[in-house]
Amino acid sequence: MPDHDTLCGWGLKEKVAYFLEKADIIIPRRREQLDFLIDLFPWPCEEPIRVLDLGCGFGAITEEILGKYPHASVTSVDGSEEMMKLARERLAKYGDRVRLHFADLADPSWHRDVTGPFHAAVSAVAIHHLVDDRKRELYREIYDLVDHGGIFLNDEAVASPPGFKARFEEMHYRAIQEQERAKYGVARPVEELSKNCVRRWRRRCVSPATIAMSRPCLPSSHGFRRRGSNRSTAFGNTSGWRFSAA
Ligand SMILES: C[S@@+](CC[C@H](N)C(=O)[O-])C[C@H]1O[C@@H](n2cnc3c(N)ncnc32)[C@H](O)[C@@H]1O
Image (cartoon, rainbow, N blue to C red; front, side, top):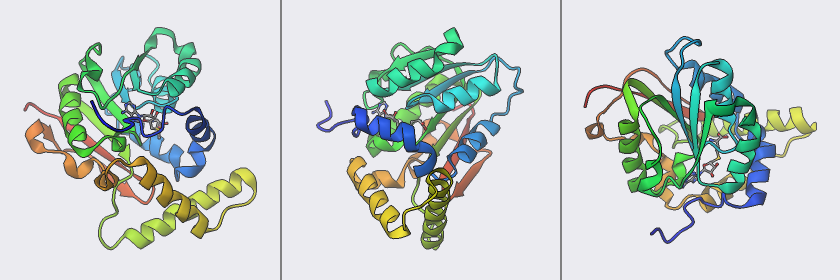
């Protein structure tokens, strides 16, 4: 039994309400990131694909997938009741094309009632909430749930490559300022944005290493073969792993 809040505060109504209102502002170029993630799907839009959305939150990615793939079905997993309430409302119109699965990804039994195989597993800014050992186990579990030839796409914040930190930070804050200005007409100065950002990361990361995120932790021994796409920007990092026979 973990001795910390495995949801890193996402059980709190205020935190969820804040993210619902601000996700498109505090995450730079959020829309572009989500579009890019789904653009990486190699299937034609008519395909009845089955997708797993891990840490689905209020259902933003799930909804994008259902919109772009009218015959797709999505199993959307999250451990926050507050988030699930929002997802339930938002996704109700898609009927049985969506299955909401309430589970804590920190618990290895989270997938007990999840029936694969899936064509794709996706996740956005969620897996970093787990401690590193648990991330590794989760990748193995995802691997087992995704079909051969399937894909795992994880849109996450990761540590900047050496030499790019200052440049990425500048781009990151500038994008947030542009988004704030577009929505509110004014933007906070970079110093303030940077202070808030650092505080947020510190508070929500269980171990300092979690800020380095999942990509370096992915062991090839788990049967993953890195193929295809990996785009790293100041705004996030979408890493794609195709699965081949282990
Ligand atoms: C920043 S939100 C992202 C939500 C969604 N992926 C999006 O991009 O809109 C992080 C999500 O991860 C979920 N989460 C964090 N830790 C979790 C855990 N241990 N088990 C299940 N979900 C978790 C939170 O409840 C929250 O919905």
